Length: 300
Image (tube, rainbow, N blue to C red; front, side, top):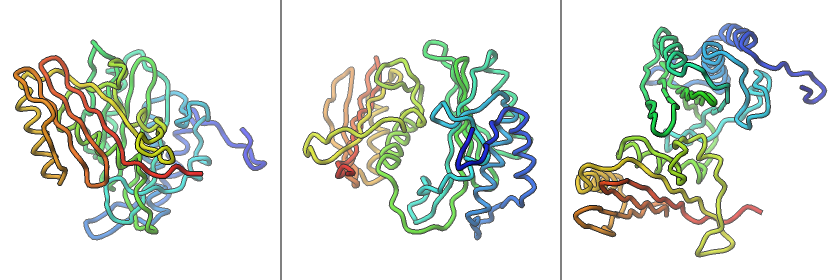
């Protein structure tokens, strides 16, 4: 692959291992409660973690476009983005990679889990396999230096999402789509269970949701907004489920109103201070979440 007149090496398992060795030679920042990484330290650390995990998982890896072979040189050109976990002016590096499907999903998850734990990472299951929907399994790791890794794997494909720890940067507002997705992931985490996109088949993932494009705003044709509809599991007690969501949203400062309240189903809507709206429905048959971001002027 040629770029700017230079040949870029395509990464396979062997070259990923080489990347990990090369980057590990650089001092990796370990944060303390009173310190933050420099830009260079943060970039090297997250590329190290990513390279190590790709090496353990095995196979050839691509960037998130699904076409460009992963290479350390291209990854080095990535620029930091607003930190998702901070309301300050901090930045972080983020990179998503796509790999092959695995014949034995459970074995692949066990390999990565064991490696992460051996490195001292805090590992948790984000999405356990659900045979009625998909064999996809997703695990996440909180790293000692403040970064995070998410490994998602099925018989069709695998992916690794890597985020560095946050570091001081120039003042840059959070991107509307990321703020919108924060509201979505927060709500489904409170509700719990397996969630799918509107087709009721495709498991929800932030990586897939990031591919959505803004639509023309219904109230202003010169503006755009994001919208998303998701389906979750049935609720044994819709009243309790909705009450928990209501209290959570109120604690966040949202204005919550009841839309429907019957013996079988309940529905609430929330107005978020940033202009987003969230509609949550719970019944003994299904739960759902319909969300809309605020309208923003279209670029160009």
